[in-house]
Image 1 (cartoon, one colour):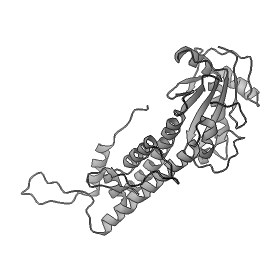
Image 2 (cartoon, rainbow, N blue to C red; image 1 turned 180 degrees about the horizontal axis):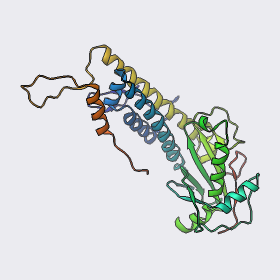
Image 3 (cartoon, rainbow, N blue to C red; image 1 turned 60 degrees about the horizontal axis):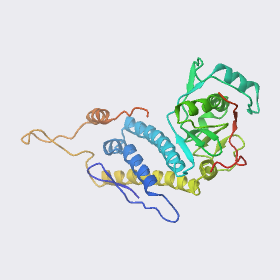
Image 4 (cartoon, one colour; image 1 turned 90 degrees about the vertical axis):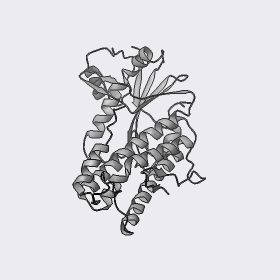
Length: 302
């Protein structure tokens, strides 16, 4: 359980246990995500019934849950001492690479040389890249809260094609820019935080299969526990805000500048303006190679 304090800080209420084994660093990520999502003023504005406040809070929950999932996967992967965990890498999508991927439906490309310095009209930024130094394997990973919006069309196939094409340039970039990190086999994997079955034949991975993807025992259950804790925390803050309103609590402390002037309750427009001022915009943080979907029966990465 998590509650909203008068100061706007979130009090830590839920704890890691045998049923929810959340390590300290993961637990901190969850707490920070809840606090970022359920900003005190935004929550109270939504609970008061303001339509814009409700819509804004709904968008924040979706965005922050996705960011939390990515951060949790990265933190768990870093527990593997043999794995280089890289984020923020820019991979060029060369037209020649796309043509090769489209022509080779099995996506097993060998004896191929691509120049990462070649002219590329597009780029791909993977959420993270896992590179094993001893096995010379790398996995290009895209983390999604849900891939529902990608279903029913060609969006998912196009995304996987871009990932594979970008993966063809990865070995040279790792060798050139990351301390001569050698990679001869590149795979791709999309993590779907909403997936419940263990079938990864389509390249879509559920959280419970993170153990194999990261080479970290227990990574799957820890990730699932972290996301469950986030949702419980959001629900608890929401319910407490409702109770506060129903018990006659004000949505915001009255702070008159002149003590001789009567204190007037802020209007919804005042709240929206203050909320906009409080929003913090964070700045977004050639050799033979084979590329294909990462599968459970692939050689171990740890």
